[in-house]
Amino acid sequence: QVQLVESGGGLVQSGGSLRLSCAASGSIAGILVMGWYRQAPGKQRELVATMSTDGYTNYAESVKGRFTISRDNAKITVYLQMNSLKPEDTAVYYCNVFFRPAMALWGKGTLVTVSS
Image (tube, rainbow, N blue to C red; front, side, top):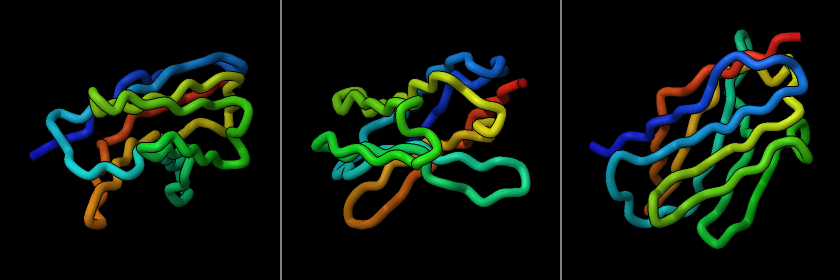
């Protein structure tokens, strides 16, 4: 079974940067959207950024101008460059792939901690 493997999380000071990566362990046909979500302690999982196969991007208002999503379709890999990190960005970040007919695959998550 194909898995999504995230990497790049860690501890960073406020104002710092991190780059998350997520790669599929095998092939996935019919990918529509790849993206990142996050879940902070005691909160619901929320969208951070997504990118469609044709390059359309969608960002949460709270990360616009600070985070950049990109992807490598050939490698089935999605990245999240996070700059100007804030303590409120602290969360577990999950990779997601949405593919036809209407399926979703999730990674196990990578923890990002931003200290003040």
